[in-house]
Image (cartoon, rainbow, N blue to C red; front, side, top):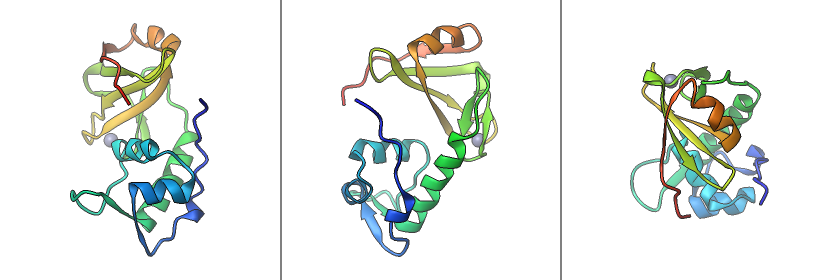
Length: 143
Ligand SMILES: [Zn+2]
């Protein structure tokens, strides 16, 4: 399964609000992608479920993600969306969450703003990272 990363921010109308499902429909992405976005900093209007997202916030988020995709992280660094730059995680501590047999999500805490930072890596990269970071592997999540 290929990851679809080409969400077009222009499909989102700035002046309306969307539920996760509506957003996924509108952008032609999986609703899990919206959940992942929340995990990396997309903020709903409030904590009430179903979550509602403001169109302009979503657009800004997608544009930021695109810009971030162009900024490579050094080995051992994760990208902090809040600080908008790659950071070495606090204490050199990261969690690895396997998503598939061969790849997963690396999570660490930004040393400057305490935001959770994510980085998609392969198992192969993980082995190299093990030497420079303190990696805890979490059990695989059921989708
Ligand atoms: Zn930060």
